[in-house]
Image (tube, rainbow, N blue to C red; front, side, top):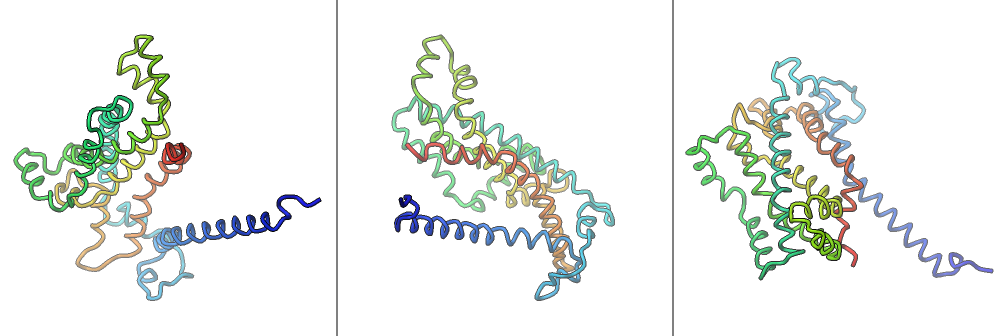
Amino acid sequence: MATPMDTPGGFLARRKRGALGLLAWLCGTVFFLPVAWMVLTSLHSESDAATNPPSVGALLTLQGYREFFGVSTGVSPWPPLINSFSASLMSTLLVLVLSIPAAYALSIKPVRKWSDAMFFFLSTKMLPSVAGLLPIYLIAKDSGLLDNVALLVILYTSMNLPIAVWMMRSFLAEVPVEILEAASIDGAGLPTVLARIVAPVVAPGIAATSLICFIFSWNELLFARVLTGVVAGTAPVFLTGFVTSQGLFLAKVCAAAVCISLPVLIAGFAAQDKLVQGLSLGAVK
């Protein structure tokens, strides 16, 4: 007796799944190749990294990483890395504190014309960053906040807040109203509802939003380049310091890029299950 998989329809379904699987592997390889090439180049000497075409089988060395950590130059990357981590973490926490109540008001307890409010949040991202650079610089100069991590925290919070509100609203819209009504009957106030009921239910969405905001803050370069100097310089600004008038040192740049990318990659791998759940939350009704 023929099984469903032995029928022509089952064979075509297997072929289709196999083709889709192969396409997924090809796409993953295409996206992974630049990362693998960056890691390989970081392990080459400057002479081997600068060859055209690049020398794949060249001898491997850790000289690029020694240069990044200042073994020969004495310039430590730790202050910029700490500045990036502090600004990204603090701004992400502030974004969550502000976006969750806002999303709660726009989804579970919707205000009038909530769609207009959501569009207003989104419209703040339509202005090119460079267009607001000069007024922000002048305000920071008059306020004495130039070369200050606190200024980066404020900027990153304001930049990521619209995206976080949009994301959190879609997640909070999936919270069953019945459990909120039960909590209200039991006398729970809004802070208790948000902390003990809403937050556990939308934990995957919070994790996804946090990771995306952290990545955006960690990778930001334009404002950090213009508004910081010696004290509050971030990791991306430190990375651009390897591009000098003497030339582009590919091995050192790739080694620095690998080291600077590691915190984001580690955070992504650690929270990948929550990230997948959060990004797929609300996708299927």
